[in-house]
Image (cartoon, rainbow over all chains, first blue to last red):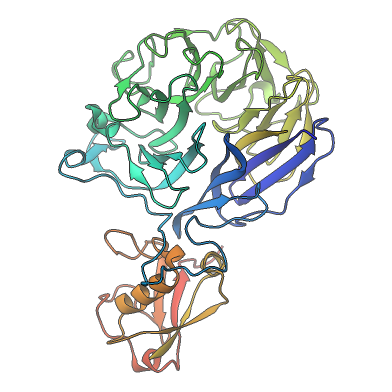
Length: 395
Length: 99
């Protein structure tokens, strides 16, 4: 029987929400990793029982957790509960939380600093994993987007991690600056038609693409215009908040930038604005309908200094035309006195017929629509502040 | 020598242990030798108490021995006899003064 599993990361733990295909009645798990910040959880497209989670805290740093049974039980990769933590010769089995920047003489040595907020050089310092993107084909391969911005990959199920340092090393790395949330690599899009092509985005450096599996990268920010930076059309420095792709058309990308909703039809070679009639084009989340590549969703937020919906009305906006023409979706959403935010990784879609759309708020609500956004209802109202939402469609 | 180490609640859960861990440590007892032994037995704690590479204590973690804050002592300074004999635990504490 088909159904959905919604993976929710919050400021104080992770929650797994499950339902059958009707998406009317939901089971809410107890918190996993209670008390820790869970920036992201995501399941493997190749094995839905395999889920990766980023668990972090200011006190104890970064932990990677993995479930092999659909989120029921978790362990740090390499050290399953109840099993010896060392090999027979005494060597620790794994260090699944070890993210160390490449400092090798060949590829990593020149990568010493980025810019601090005031423009002075600042050393790269690992803070946390913002986003985990499992491979489309191999459950043991997973990418991690981290702060300070870099891309890591594990090919052994999250036990060990290696930086793809060509990203920081492509030339502009020393000029990258952090955004208000830190200098995070928050978006990783794997091209389903070309295993060597990956898109990533960094706040606030911009978007980048590799066509050789991560060895070399190029900035793809042409057409972006950001008035808050000294050169509004600079090659890097744009605060990209989120990029979304429909798997049937991977050369078309939709972007929610700090301000402006943007679109490219040539894999990032050029972008054009599609904000159209949105009440404000500031926001964080953006996603694409599972079956209609030109149907996209955003949640407009008032401004960069007022992170809540305009007029106290929580509205998802949907375009069925690939942008520019937007309609407000309000049925079932609070239309007065609502001052929550919807963060960049906190929106997702399922692939049932009709497409389900989900988003979480900083007020702890997770809203779901089982009719492509026409109507909404909260799955749960009182979680800790929601940081991320991902959905698995189960057959 | 068998020593006692107390861990903060979040790290107990990660290591699947109770509040206090008993470990057999060889040689002179120092912060470094205690943490080396702890991380060898519980590798899931690597990186949570001190940095993977620099081995520096994480900023929001503190160490106490016999009621004294030894967080800023040299990692190679000998720990008190009462820790060595197991009479007192070596305490690893999340740095929280209040809420």
